[in-house]
Image 1 (cartoon, rainbow, N blue to C red):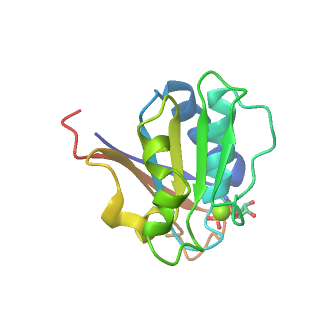
Image 2: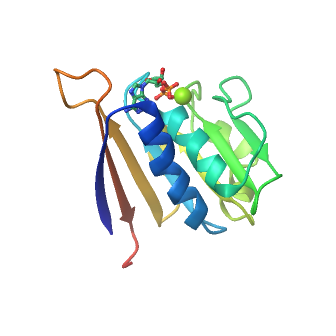
Image 3: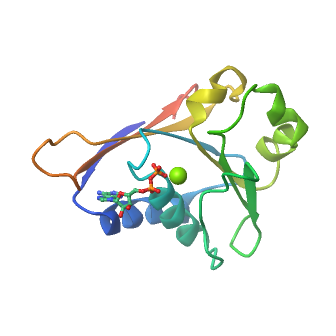
Length: 147
Ligand code: ADP
Ligand code: MG
């Protein structure tokens, strides 16, 4: 599966992610990549809303992972920007999260690409219109899966 979506503002990115969050299932791992300030956290906020999370979602920069338990299924929101060594992920319980009963969403997932599960959903957010600073291209693709 590959889906490319263009958004013109943060609200549209939120809405697009919200629809994916509504469809998300336990065990899925969403890997978010894209430059600083491109909209990964906006995507995470929309996704969380779709999962049914009502708590405020921000980048869990200092904790690496933030757990949201008040939605339809648990949401494990990672921001691995400050990870020095992928090994640190195991120390915070990464294995339990990816094989757990919730859905994982990992900002800056490329940093830990060596330890991603065999199947995951890649989300790449890019600014690709030099004339419109609010334009984003969002490419969503299932990796390692025949679906
Ligand atoms: P990241 O987590 O990737 O570093 P953030 O989600 O924190 O980025 O910030 C994205 C910023 O870009 C926000 O200030 C948001 O309002 C703005 N923005 C402008 N246009 C868009 C868009 N189309 N999609 C997402 N965010 C956008
Ligand atoms: Mg962020």
